[in-house]
Image (cartoon, rainbow, N blue to C red; front, side):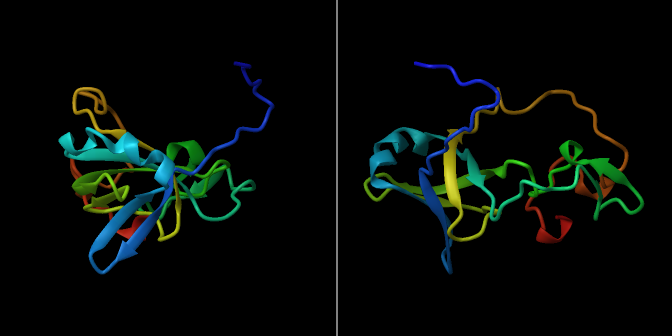
Length: 155
């Protein structure tokens, strides 16, 4: 296997796409990836990695924060969906999985219908959180320790 250098393009294959219906948010996998869902139903949450909409190659490296008036931060200090590479992620609760159909029903997914899903990982409570952390004072205190569900107006 050849190792890519930092200057070579990276190819990402979508596993499936996001669907939104009156019944909720879903990830629909392409047939070739459906067998990979085996065992995922034993987890309460998953991490969905998805490719954002549009070409974001020229994004500002600093921005005013809509949730912190008067504060400007560098792109990498924000959770803005506008990125040089539009990789986004959502931690979501699993409501149901239909392995033969390749369909995962989620409690929430902050991606548009039709968005490409590029990876799915199980959420491990022992690995995917930290016991102690720090963050800037401009993070709104009303978000609390758990800010869920995220309202769309913060972006």
